[in-house]
Image (tube, rainbow, N blue to C red; front, side):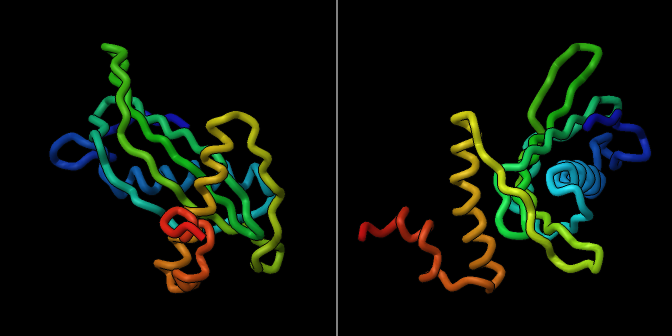
Length: 159
């Protein structure tokens, strides 16, 4: 997804406003997850959204959204945001984030989503990491006890 950063999108420093970027990231992630499950989705969580480089007025904003893993009713989406000064053709990284979306049935209740099968080395790495990130989200959200996080425990404790 690409957009030109216009004056109405910027703050007084001429940078894309963070809230506007989050809005666009939410749209890109929703599109990616809806294409995967062919049904309506809702945002469940946003992980570690930090801003590395601002995207300036007049620059091109590009958001790449890719599903990393699907669980029962939820999907994790990786977002990579970059900017580009089109006159100099200078491209730069702005930020990265993970978002979680839940698929909904026609009654607005969570529904099962199709499995994702990773193929490349990078896809396999991101797929495996998604389970650890999910367990961290569940612990922080109070939906899982730390001692039940098998994937995380294996990183720190040798059985």
